[in-house]
Image (cartoon, rainbow, N blue to C red; front, top):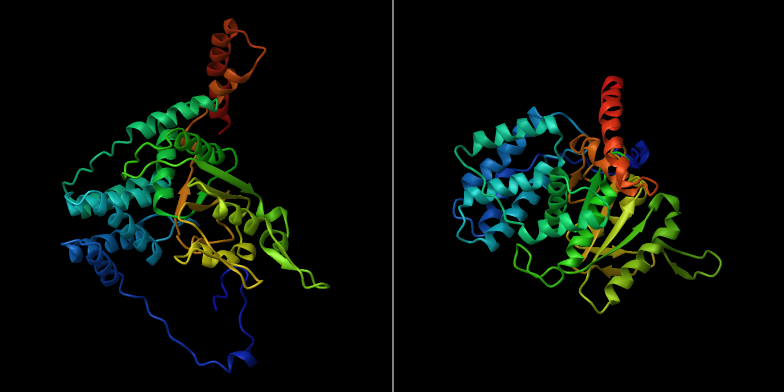
Amino acid sequence: MNPGYAGRTELPDNLKALFRPVSMMVPNYSLIAEISLFSFVFGNAKQLANKITTTFKLSSEHLSSQDHYDFGMRAVKTVISVAGNLKRENPNMDERQICLRALRDVNVPKFLKYDLKLFNGIVSDLFPRMVEEAVDYGALELAIRHSCLVLGLEDVKDYVRKVIQLYETTVVRHGLMLVGPTGSGKTKCYETLKVAMTSLKGQPQPSGYPFQAVQTYVLNPKSITMGQLYGEFDLQTHEWTDGILPFLVRVGINAPDKDKRWYVFDGPVDAVWIENMNTVLDNNKKLCLSSGEIIKLRDTMTMMFEVADLAVASPATVWDGLDYIWEPGVLGLNPFISCWLKRVPQLRQAYLAEFEALFAFYVLPAIELVR
């Protein structure tokens, strides 16, 4: 039992007396990482495993404590699986370079701005004189920039980078979280990626496989009861009624096409409803219903959770422990202003320059003063 965790309680003493006490120990992360890297045909697995585990050990000691930071076995496992994918794609690439890129790909999206500098320092100490090779996202980046314009957004460099990070995450994981305050661009981020990937259907991805069209199903799990979400038995007739999630998953499984399907849970994540998705989010990828039915998810299905914070649920709740953080400070206010100016129909072209000048003169300094 884990009494400190939301939704769980201590066992009563009379029940506790019936169980034998168990002591737990921290596993040897280095050894687990080393064996996993060997299984991905890394020649220098021992040294690289030490570097990976040391990175997380130092990060947990030196970085700030945030609800969404997780430096345990989940994080190590994720880095190793990313490194394995990279090794498969680029068998001749330097192994240290692969591990460096895997560490960055997994961790950079979730760190806050001031923690990123510390993390970069830790990584540069462990991988001295290693310069990370840039990845060419040519067609994808162009498609993302075009999608931004289609959706009436600004193709800001930092925003495009965030969308690419989300793409990287969807490639590796079938369960992920978009975490950030309201109005920070989480919804637009996955919508932009959806439009971009759909427009590239059939073209090769950086991994070599062709892009697939994307379909999204958005629901708010906290606006409905558990029975309506997962399904329930009628107490009188003992009839089973499917919930919204099993219905949508069945639609995806029975579909004749190979389109990717993203199930977006847009609402607060807490231990009450998400605990029932443990088997979906771990490596089983099976939705187990209380009717006894087990639905196996396709590889093209992804569970996304769009939340404001992780105050009532740790990254352990989503088994992958992979968060994708969005910091509103990255964008600034200018993209919002220019998008608004594009959308206001009454404004004729003649007044746009005046409006921009007024915003720059009054609004931006005023907000700075208030802050």
